[in-house]
Every structure is written in C-alpha cells, then in structure tokens.
Image (cartoon, rainbow, N blue to C red; front, side, top):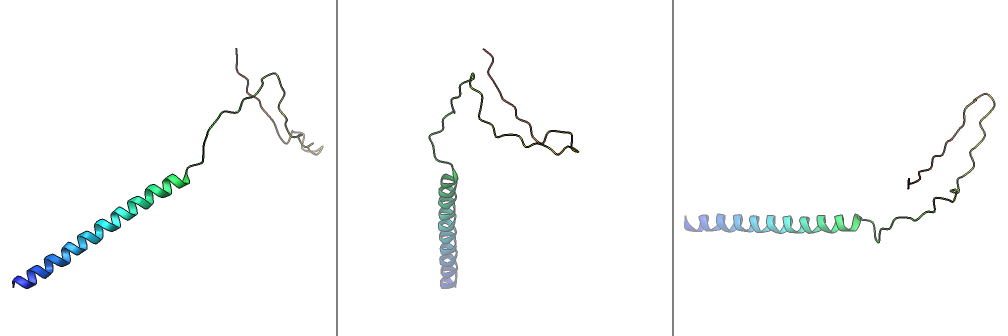
Length: 80
C-alpha cells in the first residue's frame, strides 16, 4: 500500500507544479499584452493660439427643402 500512496502523492505533486507553471505563464502573458496595448508616448497637449481662427472644413449647403444647416462647429476659448 505504500507504493500506491507514494504514486498518488507524486501524481498530485506533478499536477500542482503544472498548474503553478500554467498560472505563472498566463500571468506573464497578461502583463505583457497589457503593456503592449498601451499607446506610445510622450503625451503632450497641443498648443493653440486663441486669436487665430481654426481651419474648419466648409459646411455643405443643405437643399432648399431642408431649411436647416447640415453641420455646426463650435470652438472653445479660455477666459483670461
């Protein structure tokens, strides 16, 4: 009966080791894919001049029956 118990213990030990290896590899892959999915830096704010008018595409003219503009543009300026 000693050899059966020893064999069972060996099988369970191998199962636990295999499970630990799978968990470690999966965790490493998760960290690697999260890092690879991030956009590359450096991140900077775009500097604009508030006195300049922005270059906007022309708004298409709606048909005479429509009566409303087909597009609208808005600008944001900082209050001093």
